[in-house]
Length: 390
Image (cartoon, rainbow, N blue to C red; front, top):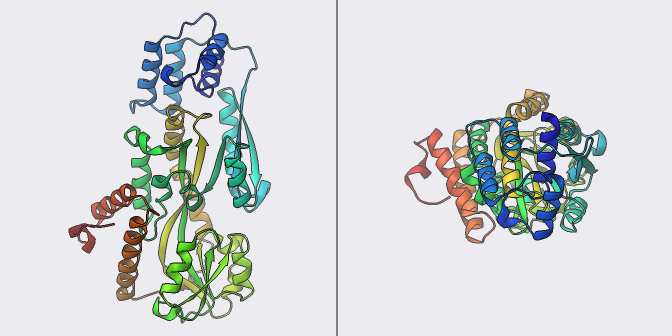
């Protein structure tokens, strides 16, 4: 009986039955048909919302509490509700991201939700399918997510998150109900933000270990992000427009000299081929990358997305463990140490870039302010902590 009530609850939630004010007459009728003997008043809806945003109970317990509150027990046996989730993974169905997402399918089934997972090897194609409404939600890079939510899309801002402890704190803050308002922009809602590892500079010549030494060399930049090309040109290097799929091949074939990429790409994309014999990896992270699950608000109300965001953060240790497993495959011989003076130069350059991009509307000022607050919490002696700015 309990399992049937939870299944009914989940079905109702994904029909947008969370806030009476957000329901159309047709949706109210649809919900009432599911539970003909359970009157759903405005007060009941308000009580449900209170449970959604409490921090007193884990996500699973909250689902059970709402089930008891509403008293769903009329769900036909075996009934499910379907949502299509599109997943970007270069490896397609056999890729690690898609397989990790499939692990969540069984949990969703427990609550009466049938998640149809659709893999895409092209992030560009997947995003267009999502915009066209063929996906109810899509898992994409934080760089792409910026077009759907500037706030969460600015998590990947250059130099804004020094390491994993900063990232963990930031994601914990973002998963809190107080941040719920920032998770909706237009017709879209952020349903989860996951760490994807630090991005570093891969070079085919170890002598390219500073900004000044990058001048005159060819640097990969994403074809859909013209600001990257501007930043590369500003340091005297030559931007080479490419995409995430073809960039590693161009690096490995010697068509580009410098490739910004996450450490987890080292073995998967065979980047050691492009570094051999005299290249390496600059031992200084440009940014901490993310993968973000963006949903359509009409399919996933923000109250439902709140539960998913919190469940996403609960998986943080498991995600980090998998990332560490991959980054540990990078042999120490490839790492290029850089002097503290150069690190300071990088930090100043990245702070200036963040401020300029914020002023152009490329980054969210609120997100940059939050990230700065976290950096200063861990290291109050940072120069920026006594200054204004991003």
